[in-house]
Length: 171
Image 1 (tube, rainbow, N blue to C red):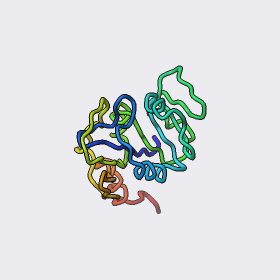
Image 2: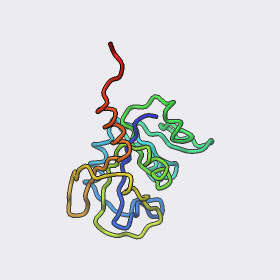
Image 3: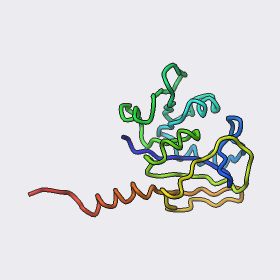
Image 4: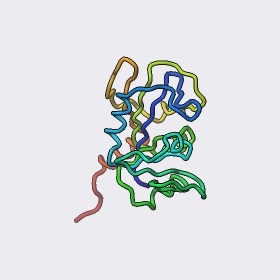
């Protein structure tokens, strides 16, 4: 499996969407999202793609969907496992929606989370992640939001073990 990172924005009450739209408008966060993801691959579900309406420029877009979905300028994969067989520019960013985050978070090494500093009404929610991820750094603290970087505890421990053990064999 190719290395995965998740990138998301949620409100204080974990809302990520309302009526297939983002329930806030934060241009500074949109600029940050663009800066971080340019040149990489965005992996999203069909409904998230349809809410955006087009592939975002400067990035490869992969839509996870069952058979039958097609859209101009995007690649389609049947599921997360199918990403391994695709030649995609790295890094790969999981960017929604709720079901895709729930499936992918255990496989993600990093989570870049914009925490919107208010509660909003919505119908799509970010899944619990706090038991599996630890805060690595606070990247930005703006009046309306924070951008936080989390690392997957299990994957970080596995990588630390590999680094500690070093190469095996030799002669």
